[in-house]
Image (cartoon, rainbow, N blue to C red; front, side, top):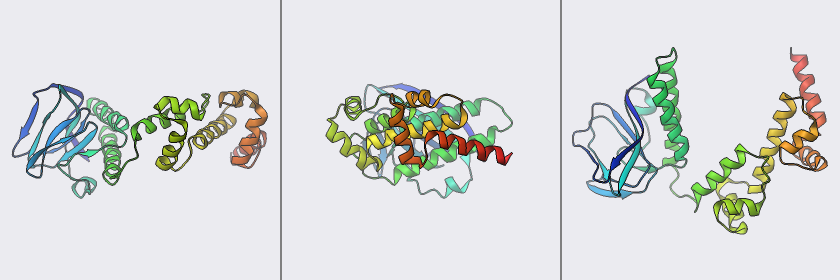
Length: 261
């Protein structure tokens, strides 16, 4: 288990901010930058962009500083002897670009909440959150090359998955990321391994399956909520992906659920 000494979110500092601990701490320090910064790496100060994570083990020199008008970061000081940390393949003392900084910031905020409250499962929750955070950072450290507009595409994909019923089209999605429709389609497919419209359709059908199983709405209403004003088109696309009509799918799942009781 890990012991958190302190966790801070959205900590803002002036442009002359410097964090210099020549002998390091007696605990681990993990920071996530939200603005550009300069770090001491391999004997020299180097500039790094915003949205980088840096892990410092105990008794390791720490030096980073602002390189703009202000410096904003999330950070956590903690102790742990868990192998996922002590034997980590994550580079130490070297900032790495984070693929999904918003997700990692949410993990920092959850760590702060769990550390503040003294619940029965506090230590276990903190341990799980740290493991998830380190897994995300390991993924980031192993990805050396990212597609152009990666963060813009990631934000678009989050919007699609959060609201698949929105009237998405390639021109609408292209407008969201300020790219041409053709360039968007090429980048999206090479980045996520699926075309943008295929992603929309899969999200819509997944939402429809959930509504069919867990609700009593009419199929026409579910179709409209999932972005299909035409119920025949919805039924045809649902059957192509699922292998049965929406009505047959609902019936088969309900029958299977009833026999399992």
